[in-house]
Length: 105
Image 1 (cartoon, rainbow, N blue to C red):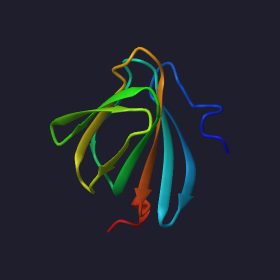
Image 2: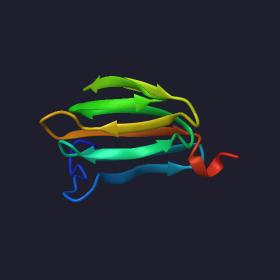
Image 3: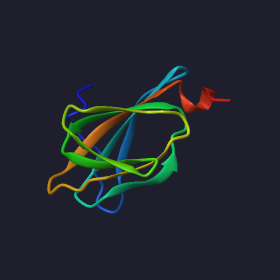
C-alpha cells in the first residue's frame, strides 16, 4: 500500500482510513483540506503523528506546535489534543497508536 495514493480527503469532514488494525498497533491516515480539523480529544493510547504532506497546527495540552512534512510528534496517553490544517494546501498524516486503543485498560 502506498499511503500517498488514494488519500481519503472528504469535503464535509476530515477524511480517514485504517491502514493497520492489530492488537499492538493501530495506524490511521487522516486527511484534511485547508481549514479542516480533528476535534479536541484525549489521546486514547500512546500516539505518534507522522506528517506526510502539508502544515498543521497541533495543540497538545494547550501548547501549539507547527508541524510540517516529515515531522514526527509523540503524544502521551490521555494528552488533550486537537489538530488543524492551517495551511493553504491539503494535508495528510499518519496516527500511530501503540498499543491498539482496544487493548488499553
